[in-house]
Image 1 (cartoon, protein in one colour):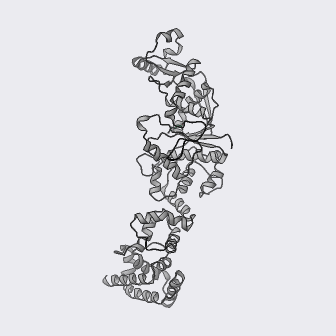
Image 2 (cartoon, rainbow, N blue to C red; image 1 turned 60 degrees about the vertical axis):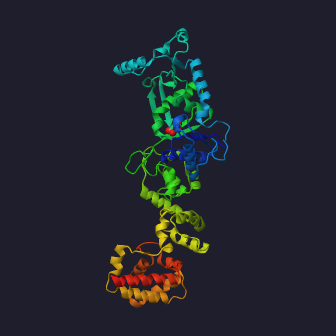
Length: 486
Ligand code: GLU
C-alpha cells in the first residue's frame, strides 16, 4: 500500500449532498488509483445540527455509491476501523485543545482578553486604516497575561510574517501576504476549538497526504498551511476542486431535487452512472471523447493532472444518456432484479409471470430505458387493460378512411401465425406488407396503438410475442371497434 492518505470530512447536517459526493469520489478514486487509503471523518462538532439519522443518511449515500472507506467511524453493524481514530471530530476535542495550548506554550498563539467592545473598536480602527486586525495581547508580557488569571479569553493564532504560498494541484500556485490575515481565533471563550484548528490537527495526526476538497475552502487553506507549519506536521498537498453547479449555473442548492444523492436512487438512476457522471464534472479523460467508464475503469484512469478548475454544470440530458448506457451494460438478470421492486411498487402483479417471461421483458426494455423507473411506462400495458389510446397517434393512424380495413387485415395476418414468436410475427407482417405494397411502418404503428395504447415503446414483435396471441387478438378486436366508432 502506498503512503497516500486522503479523506472526506463532511459535516453530517442533513443528507449526502451531490457536491460532497463529488469531493468524496475524487478522494476515493485517487486513493484507489494510488493504492492508498481513503478515510471518512465526520466533522460533527456542531452538536445541535448533528443527529444520528443524518449520519446514517449520509453514510447510506456513500454506501450506495460504492464509496467505501478504509478507515472511519462505526456505521450500522460495522465497527470503527483504522489506527488513527476516533474518526468523529466530536470525540477529538481533547486533542484539539491540547494542540492549541501547545501553540500557546511555544509562543505561536496567545491568550487574548479583549472584550467585545474592544474588539469592535479595533476592527473599526483596522478598517479605517486599511490594515488587518491586531490584538494588543499579541505582545503582552507573561506578567500581564498572568495578572488576568481566569478572565474570559480566546486563544488567537500569531500569524507569522511573510507570505504563504500553496502549490494547489488544481488551482496552481496561489499566494497571500500574511499581513492580510488577522490573528484568528483557534480556541473559543468556552475552550472549544474552531474549525481551522480542528481540521488541521485531525489532518496532521491522521497523516493525511492529500487534502482534496471544495474550492470554497481555498481561502481557509492559507490559515491551514500556517497551522500545519506551526504545529510541526508534515504539510499535505492541496487540491481545491470546483463545486457542482445546477443546470442554471448556480451552486446546487440543498433544496433542489437531486441535491440529495439518494434522490437519484429513488428516481431510477444507477450508482455507477452517477459516479461516472460526477467524475466527468471536473476530470477530462485522456482518451478524447470517451465518456463511458465503469467504476473499475475510472479507478484505473483517474489522475489529478487532468482535473479541471472550472465548475461544470449538471446536464440532466447528458446524465440520462449516460445512465441509459450503464443500464445497457447490465446483464438481463441484474436488470430484472433492479426493476422488480419498481414494477411491484407500481402495483403490477408479477406473481403470475414466469421467470423466463420476466427476463424476456427486461431484455426487451434494456435497450430503451434512460432510467430504471421508465420501465413502468414501457410495460404498464402488460399488466393492465388498455382504457384509452393516445390522441396523436389515433389521429395519425386511425382517423383514416381505410383504417378499419387495415386493422381487419392485420388481425387476419395475426390469426395466421402459428409460430407466435418475434420472428414468426414479423414474417407474417412482412408478407402482408409485400402483398399490399404498404411500408411496414403503416402496419406496425396501428398495431402498436391497439396493443399498447401508445405510439412509442418496446419493439412491436417482441412485445406481441410476450403478450401472447390470444391477448393480442383481443386487443386488436377492441382497437378495431374503436376505429369503427370514430
Ligand atoms: N467539513 C468541511 C465541509 O464539509 C470539510 C473541510 C475539509 O475538507 O477540510 O465543507
